[in-house]
Structure formats: structure tokens, C-alpha cells
Image (cartoon, rainbow, N blue to C red):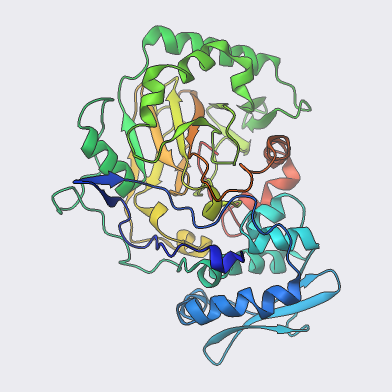
Length: 446
């Protein structure tokens, strides 16, 4: 089955939160349109002359409009000895054999297959060191990525007005809401599907949080810059510290107990997708994982905070989204400790990096949470964190993943490979693509 044949025809630019099941609405954030493990290899010429043309026949007019609005310029994609030029010509997108532009990127065959199958985005390949080219060419490569998805998956690039945020009664959705587990369940499920995030108050006790906070302190003390299991940041005073503890679930028995608790598992029951405890950030494996984050006042270097991004921005959206990322607040999230912001409804569309940088017509919501509260967000909502002004911020992130589907040929990408990739993101030479203007925007949790 080709990638185009695997598309199930579901658009994210409309409200997909209410799918009728029996006599009641079904709340879902399952956006998958491709099967895991399918179509591992593809020859470039065969792709450009078959799947690509099939995609253009179905979605080419809208994709060309997307490319014009984004102002995309020609790009040469070279795979081994073959070169193809992507360009707009006479109002249409085309891919022609040969070199017809100065901007060029080079991929190997496996990287190209990962790109067109959306196992990796252009940004994901860059972070993994799998793209050759100068800075301008790599930036243009990332700019073309949303339009590739527009052609191949029919996931059109966002236009102002595409998304409305509505309450259950059809009125404008109030975004200044917090919920409690087991209360207003239908409203909470609707809010999560509409807005892409949720604030759950008072889930864990003061004693439970204190124990978890103590475990994080021990993990921070034990971390070293070359351990391959932590990211490091520096303050303006020159203090260097581990801002992110990877694989924290393996370092805290208390955390594992909480993630197996009925209160935590109940988060996966808010929606009707069957979410179960799994990978923290939708990175395509079922085993439990978690990360501990520390943000100190005056951090000026490192990835203590990231700009706007989606958790799936490095790849896998059409195969694995949407998982739920859960933040356990060890300290408050507020102006003093640093907050967590979301662009409401942004999980429901294909949004390019320049659109984010220029500003969207969707509302930004700043979460203000207390110790013991949880934040929940779907893997493809735009989010970021803000720096603390006076007090250190600490939070633990884990998640809940969608169950596999009968058409999946494999559950996902090997965990060890993904963990290595996440570890190197914190290295200085890998941080450049994460800055605004080139690639992933940001969030505290990914």
C-alpha cells in the first residue's frame, strides 16, 4: 500500500472531536492516517512519478495555494545520484528531474523514505544529522515540509479562520477553565478535543509531590554533562546545571507508583481513544517513560525553555498522533516560577513555522497551576514555557499513548534509537534547528 493509498481522508481543519457512537458523542484526538511500519523503502524516481503525482491530483490545487501564501522558493532534493527540483511554476507545484535551483539538500535513501512516509520531518532529519546542505537550503527544506504534507496527506496548511473554538452548546469556548478528575467529564473531554490542552486541579497530594520532588533532586545531583541522559543549561551567573533529566521513570520508584495509580490512568479515560500510560511525548513506543525538568532563575544558555513547537514536529504525526503529555507540577506554574502557554486549537491544523513566527489568529492561553496539579496536552498542540522571574520551576512529564491499530505492521520506532536522538538535542551543535525561524518551536515538555 502506498502512502497516498493509506490516507483515510480525515481533515484536521474541521472539528473532529465529535464522532457519533451510539446515541452519544465520542471524544477523540486520534489523527492517524498512516500505519506504523508500512512502506519502509521507496525509490525516489518511483515516488516522484507515482505517489507524488497521485497526491497532486487529489490535493495539488490547495497545496499550490499553500506554497504561494508561504512564499516558497525552489529547492533541489538530492537522493544519492538523483536530483529533483521542487518549485512553483505557473501557479502549480511541480517536481522535475534535475537541478533547477541553487538551494540544495542531500539525503540518503533511508532518510528520503522517512521523509515522504512522515516518520521524520525535515526538521527531524536535520536534528538527526541526516541532511547535507548550507543553512539557507536547510531552512528552505523545513519551509517546504508542511506543503509536502499538504500534497501527500491532504493536510492543508492553516488559513486564518479555519478553526473555531466552541463550547458544547455552540457558544464561544471559555478558555479560562480548570477541571477535576471525575467532575464535568463530558465538558473536560470536549475542552481537550477543542483546545488541545487541559488543566486538572489537585490530583496528587502534598506528600506525594514532596517525595517525587526529592527523587528529582537526587537525579539532578547525580547527573553529569557527559552521561547521555541529561540536558544542561547555564545561568547568567555562570552556574551550569542539568535542566532536563531523561529516563526519569527509571530513577524514581515513587514516580512509577504514581503513573500506575488509578488517578493517573483515569486521564486516559477522559477521551474515548483508549490512551494508556506509555511514551511521554508521542515518540512511538509503548513502554513507560518520563523526564524531569528544572528551570532556574536567570537561565541564559541551554534548553531550559524552548519556543513554540508541537511534540510531533520532528516526525510521526500521521502515524502516532495524538498522544497525551502529562505534566506533574512539583512547583507552581505562574509568573514567579515560569508558566506554560498553549495556542488553543492549533492541534487541529498543519501550521508552518513562519506562520507561528508571524502570529496566528488563535488565542494564546497561559496556564497557572498549583503544586499537585496536572497539565495535559495533545502531542500536536503548539506550546511553550516561559522563564521564571524569581523562583525555580520543577515539573515531571510523562504521557499516555494511543493503542496500536490492526493495520500497524510494527508498534513504532526502536526506543533506544529515539532515546539517543533525544539525548543529542541538548548538545550545543544540535540546538540551532530548535530556534525560531528554522524549526521546532517550543515547549516545556518536549
